[in-house]
Image (cartoon, rainbow, N blue to C red; front, side):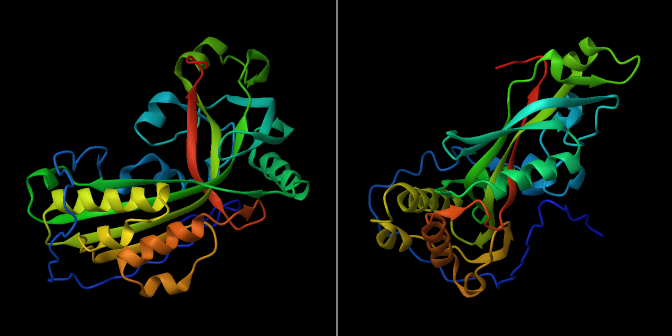
Length: 294
């Protein structure tokens, strides 16, 4: 049974849809498909860092220390014999502007929870998000005539971040050397709070066309107010095979929308300002190596 974090309770909904056999010919002229695979992540989303960390209830707090190798291979084993203490925690907006700060006396889950609760109680502010997207695909899509991809839409409204770690922040067990920790250790330095939508897309369309139009459609909605979205959408046939939501309130109406409309509504609603009291979860995680200071 999946462990559910006491801090972050992901909401997961999966909608299975029948694969469409209807092809729609692109109507927008001048789109260059030569860079269709640029910035596509050739990986299964289940093997990505952020997705796995959402399932690790014991590391969803700042200062968690892991071996760097353990972070690299995504096993996230704790580094035994070390913890961090007396580090400042900063609440920032999505641009990194500091709203308020406090001190995390010990990097243990209960202390982190108390610190976060105190920040929430004393912060009356609404936040606008940074909206981004990633597209995941199998490597063989490059030579395929069909498209099976996963689109991830992220809306990060605020961050909690630690200050730069110094030697005074280490609490070591006997016989544990600080030089060894610095050489081999990493720590969770920042968590981004917001909402993640995961949309599976399966179609018989050529992936170069799908990816080119999909990226243009997304960039227009995010950066251009959707001024060309109607025209661009005519070149897209993107039926779905799954839909998931992590963090935040779930709009049940989205479950019954076709993917083009679903994407447009998600992005439109994400631009609404939200307060820190909104039911977001940690969806972005940043680790730093001790031997690689800023």
